[in-house]
Image (cartoon, rainbow, N blue to C red; front, side, top):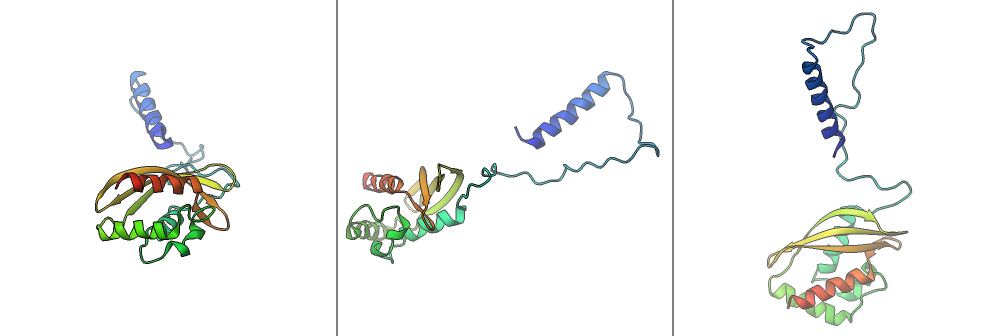
Length: 169
């Protein structure tokens, strides 16, 4: 339940309670009483809860940049090792071949919607990545990224993506 929903419910409950008690009007504030101004109304509410203090999380833009660079068929995987924890987990030539094959079939580019970015331990974050593409219905994956001088895909998440690509052929 959001704060806005709670505040709206409380105001409605107060109005119903006043009507049930027979209150037909609410007295105006007299000159003796100080004027009270609500300070919470109109304040923007966050869409996602903030990260705990001291925890650095990647932005959706940073994660999208990693994934878009990984899917770019014009750049060899030899040059993409810095985007995956521990480097490319398969031979670069095999990864390049699979990516070129996907591009030739018209399966690229993929579009990524990133949500639910959350801490996953020191220097790590998880996120829900929903990929869509010309031949791919929205497919959510829960991936982990690590901060090692910049955000990169974790080794285990890279293996998950490789397995999902291989099983889709």
